[in-house]
Amino acid sequence: MSMLGREQLLLMERGVKALEKLAEDPVIQIEGGPPVCPHCNTLNPQVSVHENDGEGPLALFLLDPKCENCGKTFYAVPLEWAIFEAREEAEQEINQRAEVFSGGTANGRQT
Ligand SMILES: [Zn+2]
Image: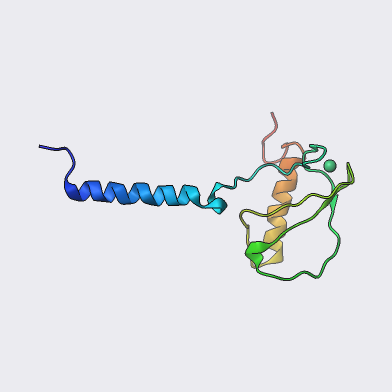
């Protein structure tokens, strides 16, 4: 008596194929990282983004900030979005991030 029936084997096979397909997807393979300048390795550098009137789909958004530390431009592609309907909610999220990057003394995270 086999441990797995024919039907279960087929289901497993389908699952493996789905996982393989996911692994092949270049979008899935890209991993996010910390906000670091690739030229001078400054963590969370001060940057300036020149105003441009580009338009296009949100999912294909490309940032080209200039690092104020080394003066070089790099390119950033958001992997995920935190989307808010109200500006106040977005500002709340930004403020939370600002606390994290200011040394983590807020939110009782002090070590
Ligand atoms: Zn830099």
